[in-house]
Amino acid sequence: MTTWNLEGMQTHLFICNGSSCMKKDAEDITQAIRDEIQRQALDQEIHTTRTRCNGRCKDACVVIAYPQGNWYRVPSTEHARALVQDLHHESLYKEHVFTLREGILQRTAQTTAIKGIEKVKER
Image 1 (cartoon, rainbow, N blue to C red):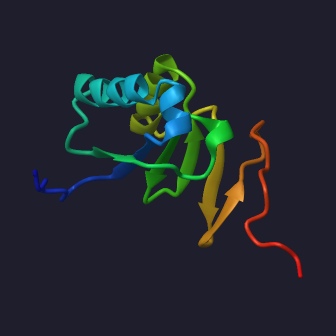
Image 2: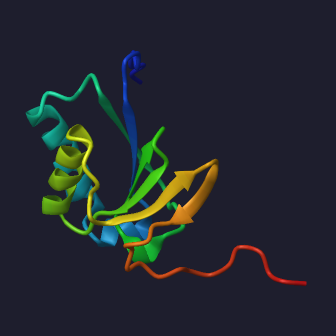
């Protein structure tokens, strides 16, 4: 097991490697993100962690950026590279699905992603 020194990290990317995302090339997308981070020499700024299901299977492959609180749909390795480049240049990646505003996760205005099923049933 490795224990990384995360001082100075600006972004932590959580990359879904749950079963639905894995069927949509999450392994290749994970590697493309990590390769682009290395290519751009961003290892001291962006850290990655593989996760299990994040509950947005229709958005596969899901990538979450913190502390920004942004959720992204990353459907290909090309999109994976673009996401890293946009994070580095502080641009807004086009497949931005959710964002954290005032402590509440909200859908972005430009998203084409489905809303999804409510987590709490009305009584």
